[in-house]
Image (tube, rainbow, N blue to C red; front, side):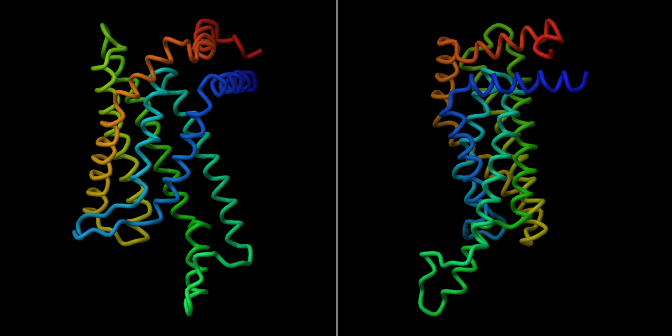
Length: 257
């Protein structure tokens, strides 16, 4: 029974990947990879109580993608896509780590008298640090679950116009705020607090500031996201996946044979 269920879930996942536009999947995975790499760099600010990292400049796109996928395909689909992106990110982090172990010299390390120091620093940056990788992974998975299922739950409150712009705005903004705060705070707590010496005030302000930055970015792309979900529905994007899920719900043994 377990293997039959597992086989059915795998079939559903393969149909999902075939139904989500390939460009969306690629850009989503790239956003997850790049935001974790950029999280290695902190932003210099004139206030001691405020701390941010450069991951915020791209993290908005990951949440934007999860919101539109949740709207069309459901929270389970968006979470599975997030897990896939995380696994791909970990794989490429491993490749970067192996690359950092290969003897050689980075192009940007050619500064007279500082070659060894800069080369070692670049190896450490691109090779990654275990606690940064694990912290960002845990933070993103948690925030993805929070964002996707809160987005879906808020959407169910709109009985009359579930596909309206107002419903899209509220489900996107509230879920993004909660999910982004969870992401920033978890990473700040697991990594910045314990390894970089951030205070709890800095962790909270980082999470809040990152959340605000995320919401401002989503404000710019709010209507495009809404338009994309409407276009997907009009063009029948994801119909195969949605019908498969519906049949599987009606008949638990469907697709598990």
